[in-house]
Amino acid sequence: AAGTVAADTRRRELAAAPFLVAARGGRPAHLPVWFMRQAGRSLPEYRALRRDSGMLQACLTPDLTCEITLQPVRRHGVDAAILFSDIVVPLHVAGVDVDIVAGTGPVVASPVRTAEDVERLPVLDAGQIAPVTDAIALLLPELGETPLIGFAGAPFTLASYLIEGGPSRNHERTKALMRSAPGVWHALLGRLADMTTTFLRAQVAAGVDAVQLFDSWAGALSERDYREYVQPHSARVLAGLADAGVPRIHFGVGTGELLGAMAEAGADVVGVDWRIPLDDAARRAGGTHPVQGNLDPAVLFADAASIASEVGRIAAEGRRTPGHVFNLGHGVLPDTDPDVLTRLVDLVHRQPV
Ligand code: CP3
Image (cartoon, rainbow, N blue to C red; front, side):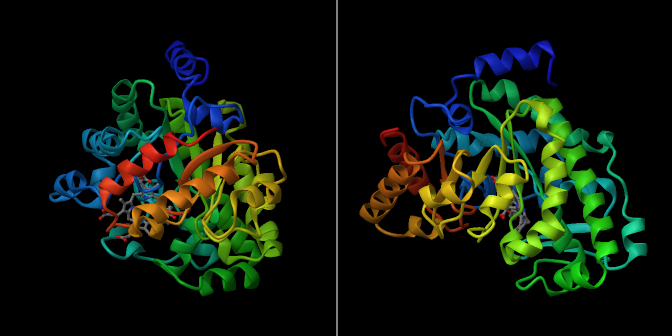
């Protein structure tokens, strides 16, 4: 919690952590790196632990969540841990009937498409998040000086799952509702913004050192629609964390045209996928925000020389930004060789800063 002795002590101990220094636009001792989806199916030790439990069960069993979160930190020596969870966890604990189906993603039993559906959505109570905050309490002493990133899904990305009922390529029902029933749309996104704020504030109070707001599917929108239908709600979530004192990372896929609007929503760090160079991304984001990214996850299937050349290019582009946290442009693909990830961490650490 901001202001408690334990939180202040931890903040002091982590002040020089390269991830946090870079996220604040300072000059880190080395180029920091972590990976979206660093915990997960690329790791045999993860597959072994998950054999007997469903995805949501693993997210709500604190000792399991803690162990899975630590696995990539131990194996790869990444500069940050990300809490093992999922964007649908707050919906699930609040009472929405949602499950995560292996190989598919989140599936919602009763999609939300009318004013009545929105009215029926439960309100998230901070107490319902206890399994997650308990996992954070277990993690902090284990992590020592490695920062812990908390996260949540942004209102638009959550709304897409709720409206479509599951993963969607074209988000057609979502975009139809947005235009045809703007009142219902804004009521839904307002509810989701409240839920997301409650979820992130609880993670910060429990001691996470940074947060990432995943608006994974925002890149499906034009900038005009993003600004009208989505940005005010994400901005409210990010503003709700302004007093938390932790860096706020804002990420989406295919958001080259939205980076300015996503930065303006109230991000401290802007996440970038692999489609545009980082220095260009930093300019589009307004020229003052550190950036995070942006190696194409598929490059990890190429030969070592190709990987090294892409890492060198990205690190050089990163040196022309207000700050750079190395990451992939999206999550680790399940078939990635974990040894390639370990070597990548080492290679990133040897780049000049
Ligand atoms: O990054 C990390 O290491 C933390 C863990 C994390 C997971 N999901 C674990 C997970 C994070 C940050 C997420 C966020 C998430 N979940 C997002 C936003 C990030 C992104 O990828 O754009 C989204 C869109 C989801 C929804 C979701 N959950 C999808 C699309 C899937 C994949 C379905 C599949 O099986 O391919 C999930 C399930 C999920 N979330 C898995 C993991 C490790 C796979 C579950 C398994 O191992 O069986």
